[in-house]
Image (spheres, rainbow, N blue to C red):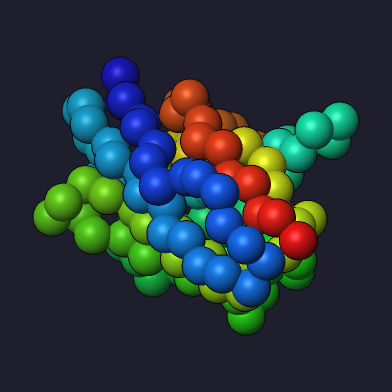
Length: 125
């Protein structure tokens, strides 16, 4: 069993920055790829960015490339999502997820094993 807890959400103005953290606990946590997903009101959940267990591979959705950066500190069992140049369309509940899967497929929603409870980000215009 793996537990994922997100933190760092909140309200920010357009153009601003936030950093999300996903803290993982449980057995074999270092073997899982970790990803960030988001769900905006009235929309389906979408993969934002995913990182492999070794940190070698990363994946970004086109909508966040060049603005968001995913990183991972296995010593702290934490994955970060640095979000810069935020836009109102980034407003959503952001979820952390874990899977034993290639990052591209994971971010497509394949074989997600565990989910966090989510954290809300609101970007005001």
